[in-house]
Image (cartoon, rainbow, N blue to C red; front, side):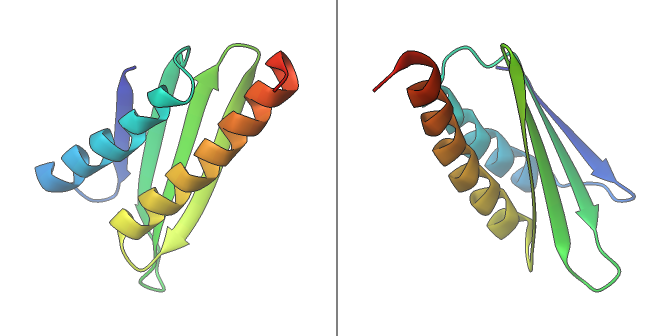
Length: 96
């Protein structure tokens, strides 16, 4: 899966990009037919960090947006929610 990361109005360092690749890449364990993954990073004026993840999967897109104190916390929150959504989607489509 190709992970496209876009940092809006700032430059993300390599450490953050590697962290995102590692965490978001784990989603392939739950669903191996992910077509694309777009991650948008934004710094909010109130000092929060927002991460928006869009997973392109056949028949649907899963989109999650979370705000936290750090980008790392927001990424972990997004991945946790996406894991749950992928599992629910697979159960709905393919049965338990």
